Length: 422
Image (cartoon, rainbow, N blue to C red; front, side, top):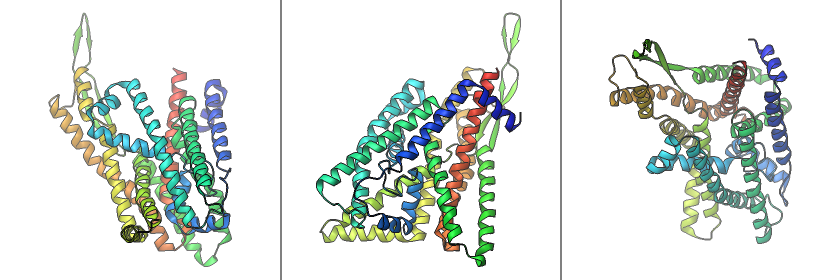
């Protein structure tokens, strides 16, 4: 089935059309919310601050563009993502939470998600207050006082929870993951301004650099598609079983293991984690204490160094890829399910040996996926260092997320179409 025929089929299916229209309406609502600023902002100082700070420029993309004008949804889905990270970490330390997430089915996952939502509230309050302190120290707010600060913190927190709710509605009543689609919308919404900035600063002498960036973007898209779709098949054979006069089983199939099990989640996790030290440095710098000032200066100096920042970013993305794969993929469960269904891997004993074999294969292929994600994550920093143009510095991460979300969205539509055909 070609692409145009598939689009026609989707549009003529009433249920799918409603789901797609719902996603479109929710994205429009989110973009409208991202244009409503909180009160008391010096717009010129804000634009100057974001232009000189690559990290906050990236956060602006992941917040859906709401940070560029300090909108009421400036935090985007950040607090919810951070809460999800903490909950995933707790599953490694709490057997009860791990059982809830992996063994209790949809009911357990729903309860797990509810805990993440509740944890998002205090995290949104903390992040909103930290952002306001950072921006107040930069002279971006024209109104500074207890009442205005408390009001803005409550507005930003409510906006973050509203975005989280919109994402949940998109997941439930739309197609695909609502949180990923919101981040995708933020990246796509920033493209016109980025293209406009490139056109405004166009220099004919840099045409080879522009072509080089375009070629690199195409190469990254190709690499993302290849790594995202790449699988390591493990052969599986079902034993023959006799039931009455019929013989069941005896067929051979395979167990597909993805090279990149984690998707773009490790990059989002790493960005969320790397935000905290910089916030802490800014908060400590606001106190009139020599020791706190020295700690603040040290943290600021460390993260201002591009090499240190890139190395930390690379390591975090690499480790989070392994961590998220370990949390979401349990070889022991796969081994148990194979054994219960009378299946086995040729040459490998059922039970613990099968679990160990699958775990070793996942560890090896995850090395490729983790290395690729980490390289793509630091690619913007390398591009900025080589070209000296911050407009080209968002390429790697943004392209990775856009391509991955589009691929996932297309797969979800294919699944819906196939289900209706059957």
